[in-house]
Length: 110
Image 1 (cartoon, rainbow, N blue to C red):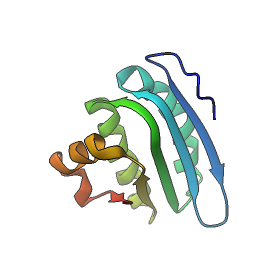
Image 2: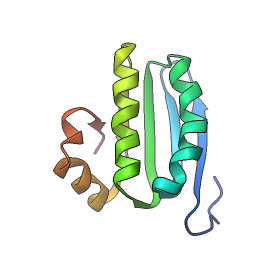
Image 3: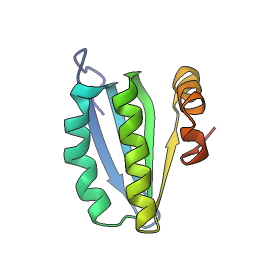
Image 4: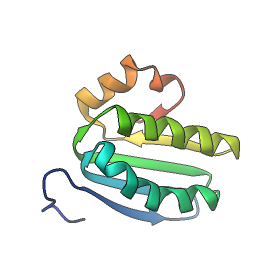
């Protein structure tokens, strides 16, 4: 993954194996980054991957638009029997996930 991401930019890396697809997010996941997220994640969902893991360890910022995309991703995956997990989300992002109630529909790895 590229550690030198410009401010305001979302960088996304994907890897898959037989059990899951992992999407690494690096940078800022806000309204400006949602387009890039959609370009990468929409085809993944269409391929019915089963389990998608969003690794948030490289995020420096997330807003309501990014959280909304996570909820939307979970709903789309669940419609086809899949599920979304997030990991390495950090204390503040975890708090936002809890406050918004997303933790009731998205599995959060500790």
